[in-house]
Figure 1: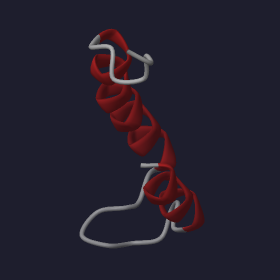
Figure 2: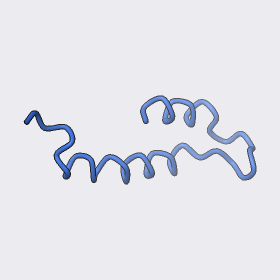
Figure 3: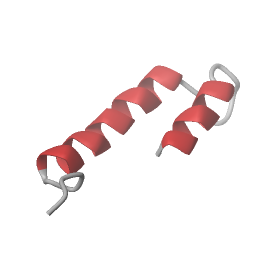
Length: 45
């Protein structure tokens, strides 16, 4: 996930089908990370 954020940051504003947008990617990353945190994925045990 962190690598994809870095790639999105490097490509921010360049055209693909639309435009690459780092902030949309950051929100998407947060949406994926929150269930992992609340689901206990990062707790030991």
